[in-house]
Image (cartoon, rainbow, N blue to C red; front, side, top):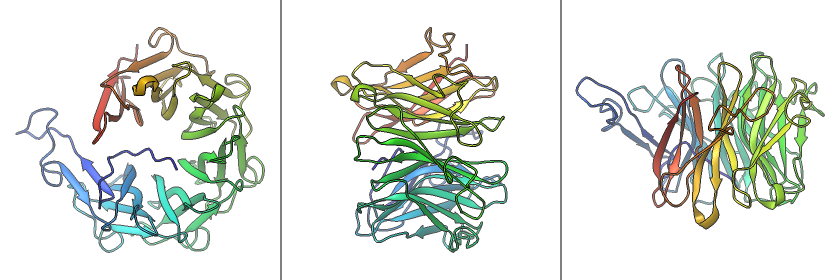
Length: 374
Protein backbone atom coordinates (compact mmCIF):
# COMPACT_ATOMS: atom_id res chain seq x y z
CA UNK A 1 0.00 0.00 0.00
CA UNK A 2 1.30 3.45 -0.91
CA UNK A 3 0.47 6.53 1.10
CA UNK A 4 1.92 9.93 0.22
CA UNK A 5 0.49 12.39 2.68
CA UNK A 6 0.11 16.15 2.72
CA UNK A 7 0.54 16.02 6.49
CA UNK A 8 2.30 13.98 9.13
CA UNK A 9 0.50 10.96 10.59
CA UNK A 10 -0.07 11.14 14.33
CA UNK A 11 -1.32 8.32 16.55
CA UNK A 12 -4.98 8.75 17.39
CA UNK A 13 -5.62 11.48 14.85
CA UNK A 14 -6.50 11.81 11.21
CA UNK A 15 -5.50 15.43 10.77
CA UNK A 16 -2.60 17.70 11.58
CA UNK A 17 -2.58 21.25 10.15
CA UNK A 18 -0.03 23.99 10.42
CA UNK A 19 -1.10 27.46 9.29
CA UNK A 20 1.36 30.20 8.37
CA UNK A 21 0.13 33.77 7.96
CA UNK A 22 1.07 37.39 8.49
CA UNK A 23 -1.04 38.96 11.26
CA UNK A 24 0.06 42.47 12.18
CA UNK A 25 1.61 41.37 15.47
CA UNK A 26 3.53 38.37 14.15
CA UNK A 27 6.69 38.14 12.09
CA UNK A 28 6.78 36.71 8.58
CA UNK A 29 6.93 32.93 8.73
CA UNK A 30 5.46 32.64 12.23
CA UNK A 31 2.58 30.25 12.84
CA UNK A 32 -0.77 32.05 12.55
CA UNK A 33 -2.23 32.34 16.10
CA UNK A 34 -5.73 32.96 14.68
CA UNK A 35 -5.80 29.36 13.37
CA UNK A 36 -6.55 26.66 15.92
CA UNK A 37 -4.23 26.85 18.91
CA UNK A 38 -1.06 28.72 18.05
CA UNK A 39 -1.48 27.96 14.35
CA UNK A 40 -1.98 24.20 14.84
CA UNK A 41 -4.99 21.90 14.68
CA UNK A 42 -5.35 18.17 15.41
CA UNK A 43 -8.54 16.18 15.01
CA UNK A 44 -9.24 12.80 16.58
CA UNK A 45 -11.50 10.19 14.98
CA UNK A 46 -10.66 7.15 17.08
CA UNK A 47 -8.14 5.84 19.57
CA UNK A 48 -6.39 4.08 16.69
CA UNK A 49 -3.86 5.63 14.33
CA UNK A 50 -5.17 7.90 11.63
CA UNK A 51 -3.75 9.63 8.59
CA UNK A 52 -4.55 12.62 6.47
CA UNK A 53 -3.46 12.06 2.90
CA UNK A 54 -4.95 15.09 1.15
CA UNK A 55 -6.37 18.54 1.85
CA UNK A 56 -8.37 20.89 -0.38
CA UNK A 57 -9.80 24.38 0.09
CA UNK A 58 -13.45 25.08 -0.60
CA UNK A 59 -14.32 28.37 -2.28
CA UNK A 60 -15.74 29.62 1.06
CA UNK A 61 -12.35 29.12 2.75
CA UNK A 62 -13.23 25.92 4.60
CA UNK A 63 -10.74 23.05 4.47
CA UNK A 64 -11.68 19.46 3.61
CA UNK A 65 -9.19 16.74 4.52
CA UNK A 66 -9.38 13.03 3.73
CA UNK A 67 -7.51 9.95 4.78
CA UNK A 68 -8.06 7.03 7.12
CA UNK A 69 -9.48 6.48 10.58
CA UNK A 70 -8.46 3.57 12.78
CA UNK A 71 -5.47 2.51 10.70
CA UNK A 72 -4.15 0.12 13.36
CA UNK A 73 -7.59 -1.29 14.16
CA UNK A 74 -9.47 -4.26 12.71
CA UNK A 75 -11.62 -2.26 10.25
CA UNK A 76 -10.02 1.04 9.14
CA UNK A 77 -12.38 3.39 7.32
CA UNK A 78 -12.15 6.17 4.77
CA UNK A 79 -12.32 9.41 6.76
CA UNK A 80 -13.09 13.07 5.99
CA UNK A 81 -13.09 16.18 8.14
CA UNK A 82 -14.07 19.76 7.38
CA UNK A 83 -12.66 22.73 9.25
CA UNK A 84 -13.68 26.35 9.27
CA UNK A 85 -11.17 28.99 8.26
CA UNK A 86 -10.19 29.46 11.92
CA UNK A 87 -9.38 25.75 12.29
CA UNK A 88 -12.50 24.77 14.25
CA UNK A 89 -14.47 21.74 13.10
CA UNK A 90 -17.43 22.63 10.87
CA UNK A 91 -20.40 21.04 12.64
CA UNK A 92 -22.61 21.45 9.54
CA UNK A 93 -20.53 18.61 8.05
CA UNK A 94 -21.56 15.20 9.37
CA UNK A 95 -22.97 16.75 12.55
CA UNK A 96 -19.57 17.16 14.21
CA UNK A 97 -17.23 17.97 11.33
CA UNK A 98 -16.20 14.37 10.77
CA UNK A 99 -17.41 11.61 8.43
CA UNK A 100 -16.25 8.00 8.02
CA UNK A 101 -17.23 5.65 5.21
CA UNK A 102 -16.93 1.87 5.17
CA UNK A 103 -16.63 -0.07 1.91
CA UNK A 104 -15.50 -3.46 3.28
CA UNK A 105 -14.58 -5.19 6.51
CA UNK A 106 -10.93 -4.66 5.52
CA UNK A 107 -8.94 -1.44 5.22
CA UNK A 108 -10.50 1.48 3.31
CA UNK A 109 -8.81 4.84 2.92
CA UNK A 110 -8.76 8.02 0.83
CA UNK A 111 -5.71 9.28 -1.02
CA UNK A 112 -7.21 12.30 -2.81
CA UNK A 113 -10.18 14.63 -2.46
CA UNK A 114 -11.68 17.27 -4.78
CA UNK A 115 -14.63 19.67 -4.74
CA UNK A 116 -17.07 19.72 -7.65
CA UNK A 117 -18.44 23.02 -8.98
CA UNK A 118 -21.76 22.22 -7.27
CA UNK A 119 -20.03 21.87 -3.89
CA UNK A 120 -20.19 18.08 -3.72
CA UNK A 121 -17.05 16.36 -2.43
CA UNK A 122 -15.37 13.45 -4.20
CA UNK A 123 -12.89 11.28 -2.30
CA UNK A 124 -10.94 8.43 -3.88
CA UNK A 125 -8.59 5.75 -2.62
CA UNK A 126 -8.62 2.02 -1.96
CA UNK A 127 -11.24 -0.43 -0.78
CA UNK A 128 -10.37 -3.76 0.81
CA UNK A 129 -6.75 -3.17 1.74
CA UNK A 130 -5.22 -6.21 3.35
CA UNK A 131 -7.71 -8.43 1.56
CA UNK A 132 -7.20 -10.64 -1.49
CA UNK A 133 -8.18 -8.05 -4.10
CA UNK A 134 -8.21 -4.35 -3.10
CA UNK A 135 -10.00 -2.11 -5.61
CA UNK A 136 -10.29 1.49 -6.72
CA UNK A 137 -12.71 3.23 -4.33
CA UNK A 138 -14.69 6.44 -4.91
CA UNK A 139 -17.19 8.15 -2.65
CA UNK A 140 -19.18 11.32 -3.27
CA UNK A 141 -20.68 13.43 -0.52
CA UNK A 142 -23.23 16.19 -0.39
CA UNK A 143 -22.10 19.50 1.08
CA UNK A 144 -23.42 18.42 4.51
CA UNK A 145 -21.25 15.27 4.53
CA UNK A 146 -24.00 12.78 3.72
CA UNK A 147 -23.30 10.25 0.98
CA UNK A 148 -24.71 11.34 -2.40
CA UNK A 149 -27.02 8.48 -3.39
CA UNK A 150 -27.16 9.71 -7.00
CA UNK A 151 -23.57 8.44 -7.29
CA UNK A 152 -23.33 4.67 -7.63
CA UNK A 153 -26.70 4.17 -5.91
CA UNK A 154 -25.40 4.68 -2.37
CA UNK A 155 -22.60 7.23 -2.83
CA UNK A 156 -19.90 4.60 -3.28
CA UNK A 157 -18.25 3.05 -6.35
CA UNK A 158 -15.49 0.45 -6.68
CA UNK A 159 -13.63 -0.52 -9.85
CA UNK A 160 -11.55 -3.63 -10.47
CA UNK A 161 -8.84 -3.90 -13.15
CA UNK A 162 -7.08 -7.17 -12.26
CA UNK A 163 -7.06 -9.89 -9.63
CA UNK A 164 -4.14 -8.10 -7.97
CA UNK A 165 -4.37 -5.16 -5.54
CA UNK A 166 -5.15 -1.72 -6.97
CA UNK A 167 -4.71 1.75 -5.52
CA UNK A 168 -6.30 4.99 -6.71
CA UNK A 169 -3.87 7.84 -6.11
CA UNK A 170 -4.92 10.76 -8.33
CA UNK A 171 -8.19 12.51 -9.19
CA UNK A 172 -9.36 15.19 -11.62
CA UNK A 173 -12.84 16.51 -12.34
CA UNK A 174 -13.43 17.56 -15.94
CA UNK A 175 -15.35 20.76 -16.79
CA UNK A 176 -18.26 18.57 -17.96
CA UNK A 177 -18.45 16.92 -14.53
CA UNK A 178 -16.91 13.60 -15.51
CA UNK A 179 -14.47 12.18 -12.96
CA UNK A 180 -11.00 10.92 -13.88
CA UNK A 181 -9.10 8.64 -11.53
CA UNK A 182 -5.59 7.19 -11.87
CA UNK A 183 -3.26 4.94 -9.93
CA UNK A 184 -1.69 1.53 -10.18
CA UNK A 185 -3.09 -1.89 -10.91
CA UNK A 186 -1.41 -5.15 -10.10
CA UNK A 187 0.50 -4.42 -6.88
CA UNK A 188 2.50 -7.57 -6.29
CA UNK A 189 2.36 -8.44 -9.98
CA UNK A 190 5.69 -7.80 -11.78
CA UNK A 191 3.67 -6.24 -14.60
CA UNK A 192 2.02 -3.50 -12.56
CA UNK A 193 0.76 -0.67 -14.80
CA UNK A 194 -0.53 2.89 -14.88
CA UNK A 195 -4.33 2.67 -14.87
CA UNK A 196 -6.99 5.31 -15.51
CA UNK A 197 -10.76 5.21 -15.29
CA UNK A 198 -13.34 7.82 -16.22
CA UNK A 199 -16.78 8.02 -14.65
CA UNK A 200 -19.97 9.75 -15.67
CA UNK A 201 -21.63 12.04 -13.13
CA UNK A 202 -23.73 9.14 -11.80
CA UNK A 203 -20.64 7.04 -11.01
CA UNK A 204 -20.96 4.66 -13.96
CA UNK A 205 -17.88 4.03 -16.10
CA UNK A 206 -17.76 6.26 -19.18
CA UNK A 207 -17.83 3.81 -22.10
CA UNK A 208 -16.44 6.46 -24.49
CA UNK A 209 -13.12 6.41 -22.62
CA UNK A 210 -10.53 3.74 -23.42
CA UNK A 211 -11.91 0.21 -23.23
CA UNK A 212 -15.23 0.37 -21.39
CA UNK A 213 -14.13 3.31 -19.28
CA UNK A 214 -10.66 2.00 -18.42
CA UNK A 215 -7.11 2.55 -19.74
CA UNK A 216 -3.98 0.57 -18.86
CA UNK A 217 -0.47 1.79 -19.79
CA UNK A 218 2.75 -0.16 -19.40
CA UNK A 219 6.20 1.44 -19.49
CA UNK A 220 8.25 -1.62 -18.61
CA UNK A 221 7.98 -5.27 -17.67
CA UNK A 222 8.45 -4.12 -14.10
CA UNK A 223 6.03 -2.22 -11.81
CA UNK A 224 4.74 1.17 -13.02
CA UNK A 225 2.36 3.34 -10.99
CA UNK A 226 0.69 6.75 -11.44
CA UNK A 227 0.69 9.20 -8.52
CA UNK A 228 -0.50 12.50 -10.02
CA UNK A 229 -2.76 13.78 -12.78
CA UNK A 230 -3.69 17.07 -14.41
CA UNK A 231 -5.97 18.32 -17.17
CA UNK A 232 -4.66 20.56 -19.93
CA UNK A 233 -6.80 23.38 -21.32
CA UNK A 234 -7.26 21.38 -24.56
CA UNK A 235 -8.75 18.45 -22.64
CA UNK A 236 -5.67 16.23 -22.81
CA UNK A 237 -4.83 14.29 -19.67
CA UNK A 238 -1.34 14.26 -18.12
CA UNK A 239 -0.35 11.55 -15.64
CA UNK A 240 2.92 11.33 -13.70
CA UNK A 241 4.45 8.60 -11.55
CA UNK A 242 7.13 5.92 -11.55
CA UNK A 243 8.34 3.47 -14.16
CA UNK A 244 10.72 0.79 -12.97
CA UNK A 245 13.25 0.82 -15.79
CA UNK A 246 15.88 -1.86 -15.19
CA UNK A 247 14.00 -2.70 -11.98
CA UNK A 248 14.86 0.64 -10.27
CA UNK A 249 12.16 3.38 -10.45
CA UNK A 250 12.43 6.53 -12.56
CA UNK A 251 10.17 9.51 -13.35
CA UNK A 252 7.40 8.55 -15.79
CA UNK A 253 4.82 10.71 -17.55
CA UNK A 254 2.09 9.82 -20.03
CA UNK A 255 -0.28 12.09 -21.92
CA UNK A 256 -3.66 10.94 -23.20
CA UNK A 257 -6.16 12.34 -25.65
CA UNK A 258 -9.67 13.02 -24.28
CA UNK A 259 -10.79 9.57 -25.48
CA UNK A 260 -8.08 7.82 -23.44
CA UNK A 261 -5.72 7.03 -26.31
CA UNK A 262 -2.04 7.91 -25.83
CA UNK A 263 -1.07 11.25 -27.39
CA UNK A 264 1.65 10.44 -29.94
CA UNK A 265 2.78 14.11 -30.02
CA UNK A 266 4.15 13.72 -26.47
CA UNK A 267 7.51 11.99 -25.96
CA UNK A 268 7.77 8.53 -27.45
CA UNK A 269 4.27 7.40 -28.39
CA UNK A 270 2.77 9.41 -25.54
CA UNK A 271 5.25 8.39 -22.82
CA UNK A 272 8.35 9.97 -21.26
CA UNK A 273 10.78 8.65 -18.65
CA UNK A 274 13.45 10.69 -16.84
CA UNK A 275 16.26 9.22 -14.76
CA UNK A 276 18.11 11.15 -12.06
CA UNK A 277 20.09 8.41 -10.39
CA UNK A 278 21.16 5.31 -12.34
CA UNK A 279 20.38 2.40 -10.08
CA UNK A 280 18.66 4.76 -7.65
CA UNK A 281 15.07 5.29 -6.57
CA UNK A 282 13.43 8.14 -8.49
CA UNK A 283 9.76 8.98 -8.97
CA UNK A 284 7.30 11.81 -9.64
CA UNK A 285 4.64 12.23 -6.94
CA UNK A 286 3.14 15.56 -8.02
CA UNK A 287 2.85 17.72 -11.12
CA UNK A 288 1.44 21.00 -12.38
CA UNK A 289 1.36 23.20 -15.48
CA UNK A 290 2.94 26.59 -16.01
CA UNK A 291 0.97 29.35 -17.75
CA UNK A 292 3.03 28.72 -20.90
CA UNK A 293 2.00 25.05 -20.94
CA UNK A 294 5.30 23.66 -19.70
CA UNK A 295 4.97 20.73 -17.31
CA UNK A 296 6.61 20.67 -13.87
CA UNK A 297 6.89 17.30 -12.10
CA UNK A 298 8.39 16.80 -8.66
CA UNK A 299 9.17 13.90 -6.36
CA UNK A 300 12.27 12.12 -5.15
CA UNK A 301 15.69 11.15 -6.50
CA UNK A 302 18.53 9.09 -5.11
CA UNK A 303 18.19 6.48 -2.41
CA UNK A 304 21.76 5.27 -2.57
CA UNK A 305 23.17 5.05 0.94
CA UNK A 306 19.62 5.88 2.14
CA UNK A 307 19.92 9.49 1.00
CA UNK A 308 17.00 10.74 -1.08
CA UNK A 309 16.55 14.30 -2.36
CA UNK A 310 13.82 16.58 -3.65
CA UNK A 311 13.68 16.21 -7.44
CA UNK A 312 12.05 18.68 -9.86
CA UNK A 313 11.84 18.35 -13.65
CA UNK A 314 10.48 20.79 -16.21
CA UNK A 315 9.33 19.57 -19.61
CA UNK A 316 8.42 21.36 -22.79
CA UNK A 317 4.91 20.79 -24.08
CA UNK A 318 6.15 17.97 -26.36
CA UNK A 319 7.67 16.08 -23.43
CA UNK A 320 11.30 17.04 -24.10
CA UNK A 321 13.37 18.26 -21.16
CA UNK A 322 13.43 22.05 -20.83
CA UNK A 323 17.17 22.77 -20.71
CA UNK A 324 16.55 26.35 -19.56
CA UNK A 325 15.68 24.83 -16.16
CA UNK A 326 18.70 23.64 -14.17
CA UNK A 327 20.81 23.34 -17.32
CA UNK A 328 19.36 19.98 -18.33
CA UNK A 329 15.74 20.27 -17.17
CA UNK A 330 16.42 18.60 -13.81
CA UNK A 331 17.11 19.91 -10.30
CA UNK A 332 17.74 18.12 -7.01
CA UNK A 333 17.73 19.65 -3.52
CA UNK A 334 19.19 18.01 -0.42
CA UNK A 335 18.07 19.11 3.04
CA UNK A 336 19.60 16.40 5.21
CA UNK A 337 20.63 12.77 5.13
CA UNK A 338 17.76 10.32 4.93
CA UNK A 339 14.42 10.35 3.18
CA UNK A 340 13.23 13.47 1.35
CA UNK A 341 10.60 13.86 -1.34
CA UNK A 342 8.45 16.60 -2.82
CA UNK A 343 4.81 15.57 -2.50
CA UNK A 344 3.36 18.90 -3.64
CA UNK A 345 4.40 21.45 -6.24
CA UNK A 346 2.80 24.77 -7.19
CA UNK A 347 3.50 27.76 -9.40
CA UNK A 348 3.40 31.25 -7.87
CA UNK A 349 1.90 34.21 -9.70
CA UNK A 350 5.42 35.41 -10.55
CA UNK A 351 6.28 32.01 -12.05
CA UNK A 352 8.49 30.78 -9.22
CA UNK A 353 8.12 27.07 -8.41
CA UNK A 354 7.45 25.90 -4.83
CA UNK A 355 7.91 22.28 -3.77
CA UNK A 356 7.10 20.84 -0.34
CA UNK A 357 7.35 17.49 1.42
CA UNK A 358 8.97 15.57 4.28
CA UNK A 359 12.65 15.69 5.22
CA UNK A 360 14.44 13.40 7.66
CA UNK A 361 12.93 10.92 10.03
CA UNK A 362 11.29 10.20 13.30
CA UNK A 363 9.47 12.50 13.06
CA UNK A 364 10.06 14.03 9.63
CA UNK A 365 10.19 17.79 9.27
CA UNK A 366 8.30 19.91 6.73
CA UNK A 367 10.65 20.95 3.92
CA UNK A 368 9.91 23.71 1.39
CA UNK A 369 12.04 24.80 -1.55
CA UNK A 370 11.42 27.60 -4.03
CA UNK A 371 12.98 27.73 -7.48
CA UNK A 372 13.38 30.54 -9.98
CA UNK A 373 11.37 30.11 -13.16
CA UNK A 374 14.21 31.16 -15.47
